[in-house]
Length: 150
Length: 150
Length: 81
Length: 81
Image (cartoon, rainbow over the protein chains, first blue to last red):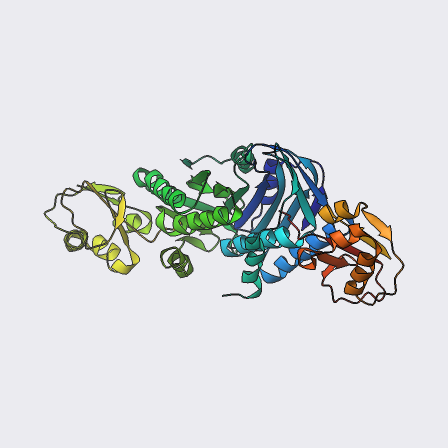
């Protein structure tokens, strides 16, 4: 398990290759990558603020819960903070498991928790001004499926 | 959309990086990578047979259905055939979407259909002999959720 | 018509492909003709629930008509991914 | 006790962090004390449903006790990922 909270860009290709390589006991590797999306009128900048003392611990707790709930060989979480431009990669998660169901579910679980439970806040600057990105109700709702399994 | 049926290895890192790079309108990239898993007693070799005339068309049809069902900016499917060793990557899919839900669901859909509807057959050689890998009931069951949505 | 065999179906029948001239109206009728030929066909087609069929490279079922078909393929359930 | 503010809570209050000496037994009591200080606190804490709180870097709720707490942080709902 590796958790990295960093300002610097990460190399998605290298990270994915290194994570997947030579896993003779893991048949399924899933990655999710978040990219800064442009907005109407053009995104001048996205600034990601975080809570330095808490972020690493919160991500470790989320990743640990994933490894308890699913049979995972490994988990990787990288999340950036600071100033980013449209098209830059914000974060990635990767999961390795024997079977695809565990790898997919764990990656979705990680993303749902990261979205609403990891202490990051996004501020967008566009031609129309600067504003904090509001949390979406559907992101909060997405957590329900993990606490109230169908 | 790119579909590649090939004997040669693919470079997961380069493919993932190239697929994700510079997508200012796509916030979510999901990849799945299948790796040849070792078996008890040691896998000497896996041989993947396919149906050359049909494979490309079948994969294109599955990918096209995914783009009709989900809002996707792009889809990539690479599937190898021929002789592979434990730890080698067999195949990958990648999906790009504005939001993570579409990217995840489409990738799972692609995998469920690839498992049971793309004309590939796997033959394993181990210390105990050689045998065709049997289809798993749970792979067939996994298709049901796409035809009978909850 | 070209008839193709894959995986253990190919191994049991012993060839990957053959030309077959048939009046069979459906896949099931073609299977019956092939089974009547030789033991190796009988062995390959003994349990149709363990087989899948494609006509002109589209998956279909054993009731499918063969009118106009150029290529029929028989194989076990697929194991891609 | 250290009190931290993030995102627009930080911007409204105007500082990222301050030392607060308090007898407040719960987070809610601390909020009430802060709101009584100055308008900028009143503005930041006007709608608690729009805020989240962590005590000693663990997410909790406004009823949480403060006994022994060294660090309390207030911020809007998180938007990671």
